[in-house]
Length: 499
Image 1 (cartoon, rainbow, N blue to C red):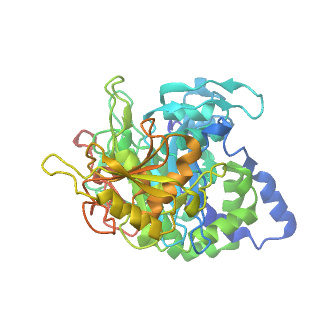
Image 2 (image 1 turned 180 degrees about the vertical axis):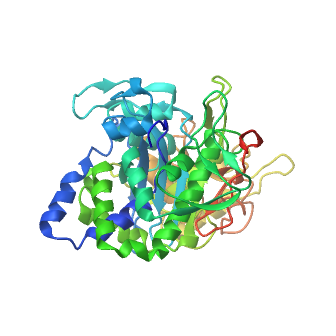
C-alpha cells in the first residue's frame, strides 16, 4: 500500500458489519468483554432538544421502523488512517462525514431502504454542542454536509439529517479507513463490473489508482478501497457516480456474505470482529456486541431482493458551482416515503407509519376539533355543493365527534390538505389525515387557520374514500434506485480514463 494516496473514506454497510460481528457472539465471556471495550461510543444526537424529529408510533402489531445513519469518517487520527488517507498535513485535523447513508428497516422487517446523501450537498447545519468540551457550534446555513462531523462528532451529523428530513434516527454507526480495508480483505472478494477498461489516474494526479479490465472482477483489500473511493473514471467524474458504484459494491457484498461459507471460519471471524470493533463508533443504544447481534438478526429477516439503494434527488447549486442541493419536491417525496415507512421498491410491507412527537401525542379522536372546508373548485370546474358536509359526516362516523363543516367556500385546492396553526396541534392534524387515508405529507403548518382544518380538494370531488394519485407513493426516478438482488449492475467508464 506504500505510496498510494487515499483521500476519501469508503461507503460502508451496517448490514454487512452487523452480520459479521454477530458471528462472534458465542465467544468466551472475557473475549466478549474485550470486544465490547473496543467499541467507541458517542451521543446519538447533540443538536438542540427542540430540533429533534418526531418519533414513530408503533403500528397495530406493536412494530416500529428502525432508522440507522451510516457514517464514513475520513479521520486521520491514527498512523494507519493517516497512511490510508494520504496528505501529510491532514493528520488529526477535524474529521469529515464524507459518507452519509440512512438505512431504513421497515416496521414489519419485510424491506430495507437506503438513502445516500452526496458529500457535496449544501444543507443548513443545526446548532450542536460538543459532548466532551461543551463548546457550542452555532447553526450555519448553506454549508457542505460533511462539515457536520467536525462540529462535536457524529451526533451533529445525526442532528443535521433530522433537521433536513424530519426522520427520527434511532442509531448511528461510524467507521474509518482502516476498518473498511480490513473488512474488504476478510470477505475475500466482492464482484464489481465496469463496461470498459478503467484506470482512475489523470495526468494531473487525480484518481484513486483503480485499474480494472472490462467486465466483472472480484475486488478485495486495497483494490476494493480504490473502487469505493473512485470518482475520476466513473460516468461524469462526480460524487454522484461514486455513490452509485458504492451501492453496487454494497449490494454485491451483502450477497457474498449471505452465500460465502468461508466466513464460518472462527479465526477469520475473530480477526474481522477485532478490527471492525476497533474501527467502529456507535451510539449507546448499539454499544455492545450483543446489541449489534440483535440488530443483525433484525437485518437478516429482510431478503436481498427487498433491499433498495437510492441517492437523494439533487440538483446543482446556483450559488455555489460544483456543489449540489436537495432537488425540490423529489427529495422531500423520498424523505416522506421513508418517514411513512412506504417501501421504495413498490412492493408490499409496512406503511404508512404513524409519526407523532412524544410531547405532542394526538388527542382522542372524539376530542379533536376539525373544521372541514370545501376547496373542490379548480380552473375549469365550480365547487361541488355540500362537499364539506359529506366529508364532515364521514369524519363523525369515524369517531371525530367535533368535526364541523364550514359553510363558506375557500379558494380551490388542487389536492386535499390538512392544516394546523401551531406545533401543539400537529399530532391531531396527522391523526385526521391518517383516518382519511390522506398522505401525511399533506399535513402542513399554516398561520391562515386557527385550528385543525381539512380542506377537501379538487382531487376528492366525490365519494367517501380518498384515493391519492397513482404515483403518490412511487419512488422518484431521480433517486436512481438499485435493487439488492440486481447482479447486472455495471459502472459506465468515462472515456478519458480507459486504457
